[in-house]
Image 1 (cartoon, rainbow, N blue to C red):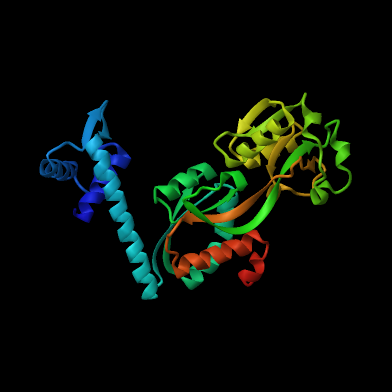
Image 2 (cartoon, helix red, strand yellow; image 1 turned 90 degrees about the vertical axis):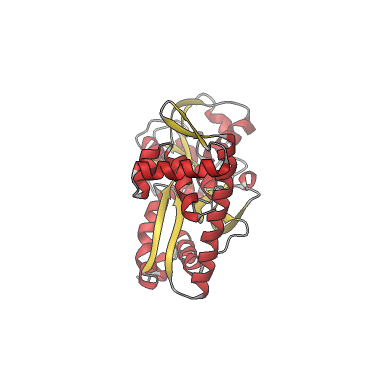
Length: 310
């Protein structure tokens, strides 16, 4: 198998169109089409079928694509190790992080990383945690800056733990139960019985988020399903709605701030989740990748200013 040919076929699968794949590969459409026809003739079977102007892999095509992905992954891993041994300090790191907290972290630590490794480029994928796992498993990214809790550990992933935090129930300060939080609830995070909120409406993180799994578990533990006012995949939006006195909501402890608009609780069994770096088991981490992970760990642990020499 020719590696360039593998990349051509993968591009067709990803773009679902020869014209878009050709544009991405800086080839003419006839040239890419000829590459596909030549390969299909060599194999004696079509790799794609056209449905409503969309290119979809056949059964044989899926077999070919799976092997192509493995071979290109082996090439990438081999080059990573060789460049690392040669200490060339160049190449590309492909990472995934969340659009909110992850992007803030990257903006903070990238300048110092760039000082040490100016020839390393990054390919960024902004995604939610469940999507990050898929990107790692499909070898689209080298690693992800994400979070997990005990029940969500994936058997094919390794985790470098950076810090842990509680899942917090934020309650509008105007809520009838807000007084139960006492003073400085942002420091103490007092425990409250979630069943006291049985008649309340809630703002919830969307089902595509990992924290929603934890939230649903908490409601299951007290035996009721919440009345959902609305859902959002944006934690910042959820926190803002609590601050605007709309309804209670769950969110990570890292979003807790001293506030007159919100009081904070935890609910039994005081679930925590681990902020971590995750990657495919057996993957090789280069020196630049390990350095980035060290910077990310310092950032999460609140030691970022010391690490960056600020």
